[in-house]
Image (cartoon, rainbow, N blue to C red):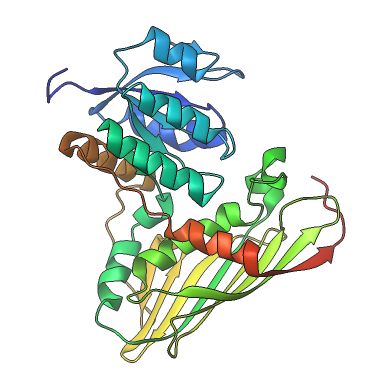
Length: 311
């Protein structure tokens, strides 16, 4: 393979997120060649499919990178096998079921000399980098996050999200936390959490979080999967020099009420652009700070019982 050859990549886990985002992004990026998939439920037309990661790794030494799009629980074993085989690995969010898994994979990738990229797609929304830059020299006084959607619309029939390790409402909520940790000019840590669990589920359907910087920032977040009437994906920040508002998942930015003109590269196309750069430079990008907030929420969370939930 030369520096100008496309990266032969395989997608592992051909579910909704892979079909909606990963496959179209790869199809439009000349830096990549989607050379194989791993899926037991159907692959991609015209692309070789394997039942297991091990079978792929044994048969296709020409594939140098794997993009892991399966649920968090089985991801560690797949990533570990790929790294041991000398392949570069891109992880869909969240990067693992636990912080220990992520840190182990980071160390394994470093020792193997391969790239590991723990992706946070919402950080690549059009308004996030400009928001980060605008806040960099401001004194933040208040942050309010509202991240609410209908789970039946966005995760239909995905039972794994309700099982231990599936994160529940933190599966979308971690997108907000990935933006928060990217744009806030000072680090925050969680101080309290109320987690609402349906009686028949093992992960929360709603969460209310409180954060502090150890000084004077009033920061809170509300996540809810019971939203009716349209999604709310919003982060509002008040500072000593004006107010900032990100809406629609970070794709639109307002400064003191005035909407800003943004360039929209597309979240997943930009993820793959960054992955190609990391591979070319022999670097990794593994930031677990959004997952730390989630882990802290489960450690500090006060459990609130709710009625059973059925799809």
